[in-house]
Length: 320
Length: 259
Image (cartoon, rainbow over all chains, first blue to last red; front, side):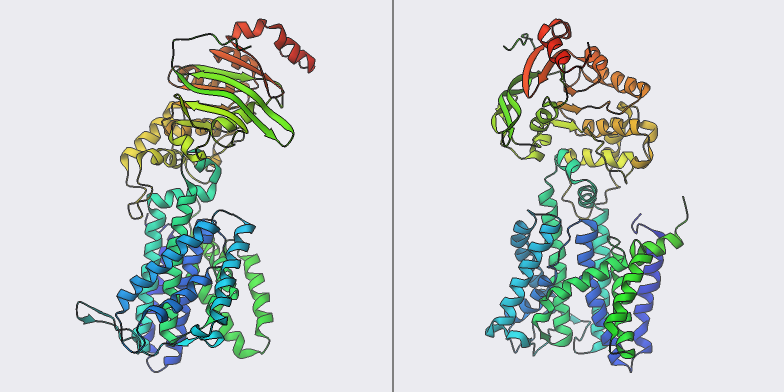
């Protein structure tokens, strides 16, 4: 009952062992390892958006605000020339992002549908222009992170963040944990109410649930994880940049989520890898890659009605 | 004007001068009614009489323009919509309003869980609660859907969906049931099922029933209110209302020969 469908179990048994073994064959090719790392980080971000859009029915174009916030927050709160503890700062950043999401969610979630899209976009644009126009935050150039954190727990350090392979495994672990976390959340009693609200908000209110509270909670959780993804991105490349906050980041994440299969959670990984895979291969073939990319995505969305995950489920599930 | 007979039962729900205006339109004008515990209170009237508006006010879906709603003598017109259900005021809707993709049991579980708590438990599985399942199953059996427990709600018949909706309301353990045309669009046999069900329920809850099926309302009601054009016409026992000349006039004036 833990993973909803056979397809999801198959996907997890294929994807994670493969991802675990891959660096062994790519040991020399650090470019490819770090490329995969960045795709996994973005998949984590897409997953948090997928929960909001697909499970809660809250369509937002401002999720990248938290992605960028994760990066900027690290620069703001960490000392510049001193290695801090990775886990402690993960906690700090998630907590601060959650607090910000609580305030913004309180305003944003009073609206719904198209109005919510507009107001989340407005907040994200505000954050974008704030960071790209302010000299203190490096303007459009962004900021550099000079020292990467160390990752010891009780004196044991498993990951050296300057080593691309180590960082790859850290991100793989994060992605796996996030997937498990969302599965737990969806399976929980909280998840039952979230599903009910998504399917029929009016009925759920009439049963006595304060649906605003459940939506706010979901928004806070997804935003904190979105910030965590941004934090990982910043650590990987050693800089933070306003383009992380741009609405196009939210937009492409939304496309990946839809492509993967909205609300399926694991579909976020599929969607991100397919999107980034296409991007990567088309970019090398032609200068006009965006044109072909657009055509391909439109075709895929039209062919796979419920995303790639939905298509795979149709192929793999036994018919009732 | 108010011909309400005094009864020795507790007043569960009361409205005092309740008004709802949509701009210049008076959907509901100065309605003062009492709904008693363990009684079925029928509300009839021609289309546009404000019956559904009244129900929407009683469950908190709309806010009144003027007037008060008292639940056990406490004013509740200002509280949030979801808080009405928490006080034990449950409602069913005119249009079937369920979770179509979930099983009948799951539909009721959502209702039971609100009462049992744990909705902010992020880790505990929703499937690990025997007690919750039992209460939900009880509610299903009460309306005669025990055998449909594991069917997906979208796949059961229309009449059964209406029964399911009542089961969901019952699963919240309400004191007041607000039923908005529970027999709408049903065939004779299906209606008969609901009538039998309401006969069982009317001695356990305070029921407010809005219904177009006159035979059913006459058969079931302890108290009957007639509304016309957003206004209260009369309230009394079924016989009192049936003999009231104003009621005949109201219906005949509409060219609607019901009596």
